[in-house]
Amino acid sequence: MRILDILKKEEIKIGLTAAEKSSCMAEMLDILIANRKLKAESKDIVLKELMAREELGSTGIGQGVAIPHTRTSEVTTHVACFGTSRIGVDFNSLDGDPVYLIFLLLSPKSVPQEKAGDSLKILSAVSRLLKDKFFRQAMRGAENPEQAYDILKEEDTGN
Image 1 (cartoon, rainbow, N blue to C red):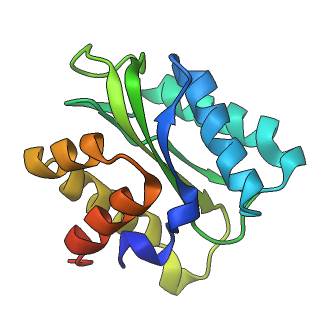
Image 2 (spheres, rainbow, N blue to C red; image 1 turned 90 degrees about the vertical axis):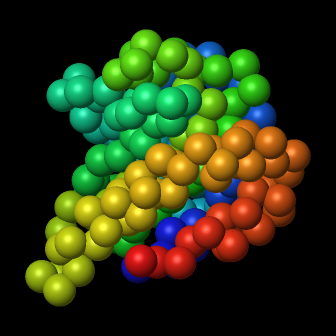
């Protein structure tokens, strides 16, 4: 499964304005709402689910990267949003550093058996890409969603 199977150019925001975890995720959920991937009335529910996941352990995995994710009944397919922050977001990351690249993933709670592993495949693909120093640098340097999308398209092989 490729990241771009679920992430569209319109779901990429360069220059998130939030400086803390909850506000950042709320800002990203607004992008999904604007793109009709999430209902507006679901925002508070999903934000609480994301924050509950954060209490289990930060999804700020280090090196300026966070991959907030949760399973929710508020979506029926995998939904994603990607954002960059110029100011850095306090995500309580494992290395203590601010986060500049955020990939948010919402997965449906109930999925057919043959699709049960898709969220893990997506998280694995995202993690694999974001571990690459040059990819991170390129994404941080992206000046607009189109440029970020093109970088992703070049690197997202689905392996």
